[in-house]
Image (cartoon, rainbow, N blue to C red):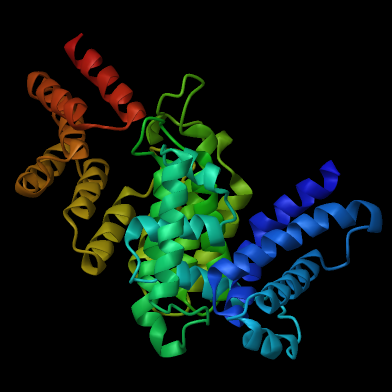
Length: 400
C-alpha cells in the first residue's frame, strides 16, 4: 500500500498539470476536474495494491476520473444533458498541450499575482495546500481560501483550458515566465523568516523545464530554464552548516552540480542559436559565465560587464546597473565602480544591496568609516534572515 501511495504522489507531482488540464478542458470546469481526479486517485489506492499498477498509470487515472465526472454529472439535474454528451466521447488522453494549457490558465493575467503563484504551484506543480501554505508561511485555511478564490475566478471569468494560439504567446508568455521566476526566487532567497525554501526553488526549476519541453521554439523559455538550472546548481555551496550565506567568492565550487551546469549551458546555446535574444537568455548567459569559471578570480569579468550592458538594453533597470557596477570593480577597479554605484543613489537608496555594494567598494578603497556607515544601513534595510546575518558579520568586521 505504501508503494502505491508513493507512486500516486509521484504521478501527481509530475503530471498534475497534464491530467487536470485534460479533464478541465473537456469538462470546462477546474473544480469538477479536480474532484474527479481526486476520486480516481482514491480508487487507485484501493485497486492497484491487489490488481497491480496499470501500464499507463496517468492514462488510467484520467480515464477513471473522466468516468467519475460523468457519473457525477448524471446525478446532477443541471448536468444531465452534459453527461449524455460527455458519455459519447472517449476519455481524454493527457499530453504536453494539456500541461501547457493548465500552466497558462493558472498564470492568466486576469488573476491577481498571489492567486497565480498559488494556483500554479497547486495545479501545475502538484504541491498540496498544506505544502504551499508552509512555503509561504501562512495558515493552511488562508491558503485554502486563496486557492478557492483563484479557482472561482477561473470559472467566473470563463478562463479556458486550451493552449494559447500562436498569436497569443507574445501577450501571455511573459506573465507565465514571470510567475515561474517568482516561484524560484522566493525559494532561492526567501522574503520570509527562513533563509531559503528549497522546495519552492525546485518547483520553479521543474516548471521551467516543463515549459521548455512544451515550447521548444521559444528561446526565452529555454533561457529561463537554463538560468534557474544554473542558479540552482550552486545550492549545496550557497549556505554553510550553520545556515549562513556563503558569498560567491568563497563558495566551494566542487560542491556545484557539474552535470546540471553542462546541461543548462547546452540548453542556452541551443536557445541562442534561434536568434531571438531576450532578458532571460542574457541573465542565463551571465550565470553561465560564473558557472564555467574555474575560480572567482578567473571569471571573465570584462565579459560579464559587457553582458550586463546587453541586459540593460533589454531591461533598463537600475538593479541591472548595480550588478554591472559589481562587475566593473573586478574588470576595471573599485574607484570607477563606486562612481557607477553612487550615480544610482536617487533610484536605489532604499535598497539594501545598494548600500551593501557601496560598503564593499568603500572598504576596498580603505574608506573604512564610510564603509561601516553603508554596511549598517544595509543591515537596517535587509529583511531576509541570512542576509541580515551576513551584513551583521560585515559590520563587525569593519568595526573591528
